[in-house]
Length: 570
Image 1 (tube, rainbow, N blue to C red):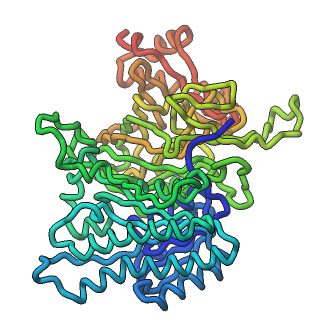
Image 2 (cartoon, one colour):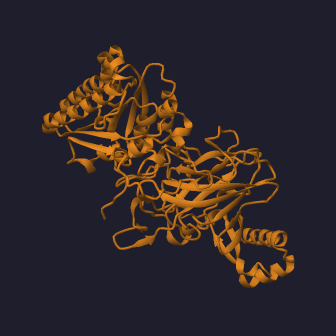
Image 3 (tube, one colour):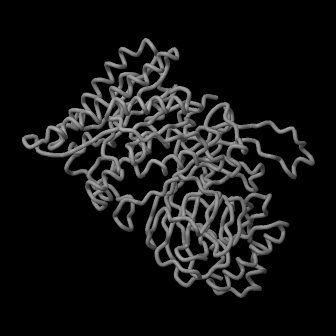
């Protein structure tokens, strides 16, 4: 079966100039997510380069940083030389350096004009020529990608040099595409629109960036990973027949003034606040529910946010031939966070409303896990079974003959305990790796607050999962999850609870599983007693007749005991 989804760059050697933050960093991270090793260049003294390299390495690829001024030819030569020293060769160049200064044309400083041309156009020329020569010397086949701007085509007042430099970059790329076609070197350009980057926030201020998307047809600003995913495609074999192309990635920014005046306003991304949601990035990957980490986001009660997460396999299975390599990455189930909830104190609880879980790359991955207890009957001669499954029109294409309904859920969600630091493997009173199909869109997960701020984590999304997760490896999916978090003051709960539109349920974990079932039912009875005025023994009798259980990963004995809301009124 032909797989779709993320482009595959496994084993490719890439160089990203101007890559320590913003769009360049977005490109570097997405190249790494697709399997490429990455060298990132940024200016000397860059305060962001070391952190970016750490994030890349946490994704399981080889990465290095090179500080050098690519506005100068000598700097370009140094970057090229050190990249080849690290990689051995270069398959992919993403040229992203730029310099900008805004001023009226009549007052424009000549030095600024020359720096902008040098930093964008001349730098692109020098760097691409050096890299192209190395590709030709190896026999050809490679990718040159320039990051331009929609300003190459849209005149913008006070930006004469920047627009001219980007337009020159576009035209140069087409000429290079023609000249280098004989060597099978693809040369393309991405034109970003208005992208939410640290530089844009420094220029315009946080309030304008939060609300700027409402001025655009797509109703949000672009993100660095939007550009990064387009870069992955253009640098992959999927784009082999694409060269000399300029690709706008702008959410229709070019046409922002063309909307009909009577077009109804779109709903804001965050109805509660009318502002754009905060975004919690997946990287660096984290495998603990720790109270010691710096929060990745701080929110108020009632606020929504979007949380990225890598798949449980740490992104190791992206295409044909990939395998789960525990020697390279021994941990599983990376979670995003922590998320700090303002005002949360021990003794409170969080109500996490799961609104949406979607795939980040249009696919999921799985492999045949260790049969463990089943080995007694099935044996131990286990095939690897590693493969990806395309997600198309709400179906997971497991193989040529079988489709599985897309029913996404979160395997891991929890808060940080007040003592110890549990990994993302077990479940417990804090939540953790519960692997229950009910942690899904439309449901509310209640979690205890055990430390100030709560320190919420989530991840390990599955495109679908059977009860018991038999092989301990689901349809693992890199995800974006939209949640709303409500703080419930003074509500102490002993362990996670889940509420669906039709049921309430309590969670327990541990072996033997019969004890977990008893504990989960006991907690459900006490919840019915406390919040629904049930006599505990009548609840006990009723659950004997109408109770239901859901099984998480059977190997750690996680279960949820539940009852339909139709019975709660008495």
